[in-house]
Amino acid sequence: MAKQVYMDHSATTAVDPVVTEAMLPYFSEKYGNPSSLYSIGRQSRKAIEEARQKVADLIGAKKEEIIFTGSGTESDNLAIKGIALKNRTKGDHIITSSIEHHAVLNTCKYLEKNGFKVTYLPVNKEGLVDPADVQKAITPQTILISIMHANNEIGTIQPIEEIGRIAKEKNIPFHTDAVQTIGKIPVNVDTLGISLLSISAHKIYGPKGVGALYLRKGTFIEPQMHGGGHERNIRSSTENVPGIVGFGKACELAKGRLPDEANLAKLRDSLIKSVLQIKESYLNGHPTKRLPGNANFRFSYIEGESMILSLDMKGVAASTGSACSSTSLEPSHVLIAIGLRPEESHGSLRFSLGRENTQEDVDHVVSILPDIVNKLRMMSPLAR
Amino acid sequence: MSDGYSEKVMEHFSNPRNVGEIKDADGIGKVGNPTCGDVMWIYIKVKDNRLEDIKFKTFGCGAAIATSSMITELAKGKTLEEGLKISRGDVAEALDGLPTIKLHCSNLAADGLHAAIKDYLEKTGKK
Image 1 (cartoon, rainbow over the protein chains, first blue to last red):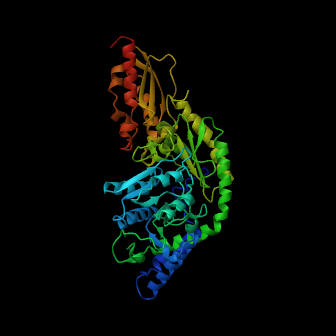
Image 2 (cartoon, each protein chain N blue to C red):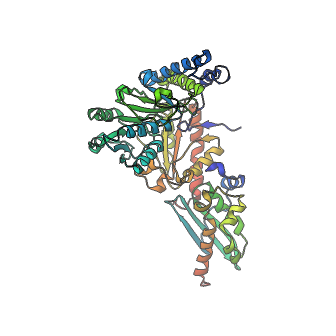
């Protein structure tokens, strides 16, 4: 088999074997319902509470401030709808950015249909929100600010601390989607001035199907899942015990491995430097304020899905913001928001590096990419 | 969506037939729009009312490239009338189908061929 290089870690990651090991007993051996009073039930309860502590430790939170959910998307939904519905008598205005994940954007659009008003802040060509724009957008009706910590496509890291200060001054709940940042860059809810924060396990070598919402003590939300009163009556559902245990273990590992991310950034920079030697190739996003594993390029005259297929044939997994690869056939809203023309956005290519990637992997990508780009350009009527 | 591509699509995508331009083409069909992500240029050479040679240049996804390649195979050697009868459905069928989402946006090759033939007919005053 040809060399396989996985560079789509922002999509998902392989579960770390240590995480799998930690989860395994909780399927068929320690299967008790955490709400049950007998011993295997109590065993599950204890495991969940230990995991909760580990998740809290990764983001500098208190254990009681963590609510387990089913995904990052669910956490975003719970945070935004939960704040909106809790505060509807106080106001009806939400501030967010135009480059949020669809879990935030489409939740905001849903709320708009239901009478709320939403300001979608623009970003500059590097994908940065201007905190001054946040300040200006605030009205007496504003009940929530939701700005992502780092963007999943272009990797730009937002000035969350500054926005957090503004939110705190005005006493407005501030939510951040930190799905892409935990375990990659330091995330501390106090330093960042966050009242709600959404995270997910499968981006940090944990299992799919489990996420969490950090909810600061004193911040109140309306539950979105009603039932038996689990997770402090905020998210009813029998707990996904193996998933939660795996999430806890993944957070524990991520905390210890945070220093490794600096090496990943070096690997990323090596990839960026080499790829940009291909003529008429450009880097999307910010040169320095970007996720350690993210490299997002665009190549003139060619289309992303063709590049993905060609890379896949050479054993390389990456992704694109091209409309042609999306189910909606819409170009990436993020690439449009940073000012690219649709035809430019079609030529985007994202590599997201992770722990197992090596310089050898980067060298492999760099050795095959120029030929792929050239072959497609030879075919393209747009290339002159 | 790459997971929906047939082996035949992938085969044509990896080894596209008849890529390039025909310098002294008798007809050129230009279809598609870079904003949508698909642009196809089909070049034809006509002799004795037959498509003697056909080449393409395409900007677009896997389906766009595979359909371009397939149309050149389907059309080569055919009469102009036969060429005009090749439909989008014929191209998709010859490729063992296309993902539903690609049937409309990227399946432009038949339109490209028809445009090239019409271009030839107009240039030669046969239309």
